[in-house]
Image 1 (cartoon, rainbow, N blue to C red):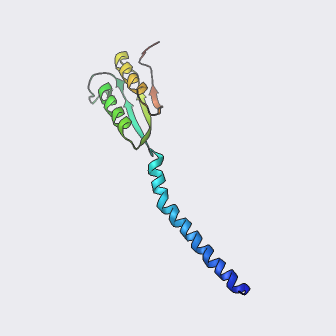
Image 2: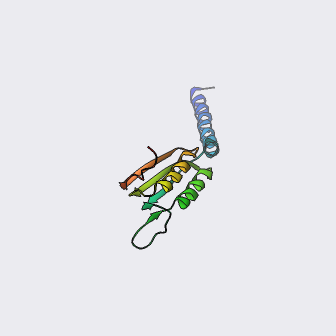
Image 3: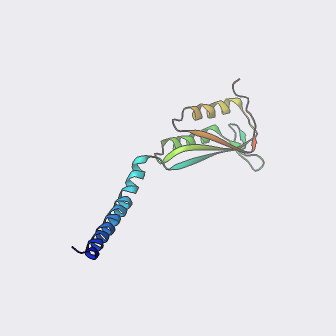
Amino acid sequence: MDEKKKYFTFGVLGGFGIIAILIAILIFLPLVAMVAGPTTVAVVPIYGEIAYGSSNENMTIAHPDIFAQMMDDAINDPSVGAIVLDINSPGGSPVAAGEMLQKVNSSHKPVIARISDMGSSSLYGS
């Protein structure tokens, strides 16, 4: 086999090899992503006073039952890998804050807090 045919043959075979590798990557990459696990972060807002009341036009309430439902949704969603608490609260009821803290502590997923304008204490615990 002369030199030109030899290099042409290696070039064609090498090109097919690269194409085969690219096709394999494009096929298996989505499968790896599905097996690798969760891909999203849930954001749970805590806006306003932490209490058992209801919001009105003058005051926003962060109700522990609504918070618990949002946390349950994030915890039970298999696509969620972590939870961010978006906090803008002046604090509030220690009992309500205690329930919210129990829900956070019961999560098997990582939970972090982002405090914006206000992040005052509800004086829960010591």
